[in-house]
Amino acid sequence: MKNEQGDQIVVFPFHDVLPVEHVAGRAREAVQSAGTVHAALWGHATPNTERRWNDRLKALEDGLKTTTLWRAPHTRHVVGLPTTNVRVESMTERDGVLTVVPEPRSLVDRLLAPAERRPGVSDVAMMEQRLSMMDVFDGTEARRAFYQAWGETVPSSWTSPSSMSTVNGGVWIWRYEAMLLMLAEARAFGLREQAKRCDRWLLDVSRIQARLGELRTIHAVRRGGVLLAIAGLVIVSGPVQLPFVVGSTLVALTAHVVHRRRTPPPF
Image 1: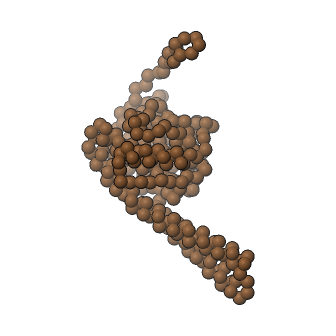
Image 2 (image 1 turned 30 degrees about the vertical axis):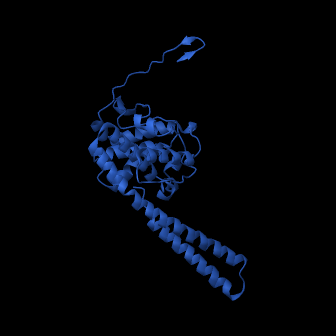
Image 3 (image 1 turned 90 degrees about the vertical axis):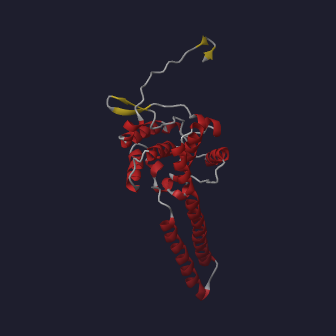
């Protein structure tokens, strides 16, 4: 580093990172340590930049030449944070407590995608996928508990039902990004078993997207029912007004119930 006073050297403390197997046995503590870092960066958060996040996904897909394509909207509560690259491979222990050791971007990330300020949940999704490769989670409830542990340390809006909803990207879109990066890593370093597991996971993306396509249609019906009910109150008169408004409202309510039931759960 150089300034007007000449060359300068920045010295960072050296940390012995823990074996991944050790961190895997303390997954809850690890994700809460990550959450502590994310919460500390809240004051430096930037607004939702979903277009750039989606462009980043496209860059990964193009670089890997995958057959998948996934884009997502995000709520205003999903905010960008300064990059820390929290990973299960970069944990140390201080006074018996797991502590995050910030890492630079991975090689494949730097080669394939532009740098972006991403939400904390992207780090958690990468941690989850890494731990999944080690068969740490034995079911849906274990994954739910993992994210709930993170949610205990960060602003509640980051884990609200709207923020976590699959329709709004939620956890699934960041799991997808994590899996693309892990596939790139597997191809770059010849990790055959990891590549196979990544490919199998990506096969399910089309199934989830088909469900999301259905939900967009159902949402359009729900919205149409609401608009027709309002129009009926304002425009329609006479004996047909009440049946028209009631019928439109029932259509909207039915579509709403179906939409909620058909939405893929976040865990």
